Length: 153
Image (cartoon, rainbow, N blue to C red; front, side):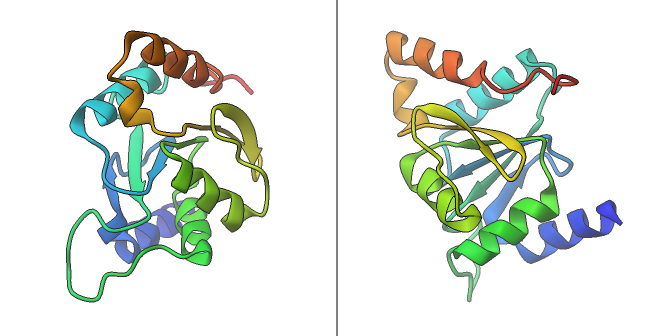
């Protein structure tokens, strides 16, 4: 049952998805994240016990350009997330945090940890920009450490 939902989610939302197919961590962003941000998030997930390449990356826009691709609306974001069924969520920018908040009708404050439909979620104003400054990197890592270690509840 779960494998069917996972396969369907990847098929339906392929233009918005990249990364690990059976991801434990779903990273959402308004636009495609820079390679350094993707690497940092995968490294952080590995440090928390999720293993290498544990992240799937979803964009509100599209990652792969194809005719007829449309941005994710709130219902589509909900279906994508539930289809992938990750252990935890990362909103990489404020637009992604607002989209999750609308889709799940809950608060997803930037710069903080929250719960989204039973999942731990951390949200950033702009994760990619935080990598430019050593102090901001430390703050980003501190927030990412609020995600549960793999196997913990």
